[in-house]
Length: 395
Image (cartoon, rainbow, N blue to C red; front, side, top):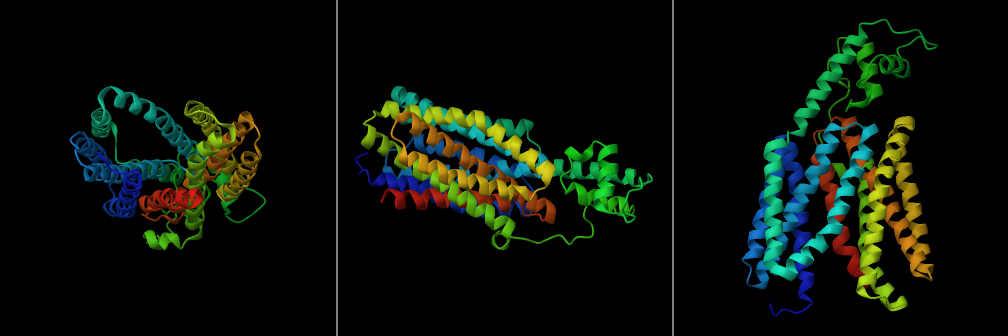
């Protein structure tokens, strides 16, 4: 289109700006309306619209509009994806589900450039536009046919759990060393006599404790006041602010490494673009294999020791990120550099998976209606990191 290479920065920024604007708003809208399907339908329609804009694009400003709409759609889709998972799954299952999301995200990141490149070779920009339109229509159909509002599923599970625990409250509690109605004693009885513990969304120990001690209580955590939180107040909560900062740093470092690594491979080792591309394919494959294990281990630790262990896991991942960067900086061969990069990629997931899961933990324990706004913060942190940190590092 006869524009300078510097204009690529405008195209990149348009995606980030669109994502930040949508991410700041969509969580509030979804929480306020208690609707998760509407935003997902909106995202799929916007994918189709972005493809149509690209297909008919003749001028540079139309490419900028395409990227802006694409950023808005991606922000909405990602926010709702994590939110719907956190709506349904409890703490001891949340890490693995988050890891599965990242597995498919990584598969998309690997296949996208390959398929897009082939489409561009044969059909030009129109080929990429057709892919965007087709995927948007496919997502729209899947949502209309198969997707339920995750909040409806959440309410059904919560109601089922209350009924099960309420029936157990009528049974005599087995005597233990403590004469009072302690949460630990009651939980051991409930957990041994029912199968609800793997699907309970509210904190399992507190839920069983409240209902067994007070059979007339029919609402989980009824003694707690529901917190009225919005996105700015969420940032002031340490259990939310900590994971948000962790996601900002980990995602930013990922983007920085992806920007600098090809330059280092070329300058220090003289590798061709094809060889450099193999590095990213290798590491992508390692991540696909490792991420389910990261999620499973995270869930196992949380199940045995409690939700606070997520923060120790984040700290461990941060330490491994630091060590992996040392390995990469001292690497004297291609193999060592690939090993260091693989270690770095896995370590960032050790940070990000429990950080994403911690949002769900906090909202479930506080009984707030701000789940989507929490995950909006995650996308905002990621978007800001992708916009701010790479120019600083490359400069």
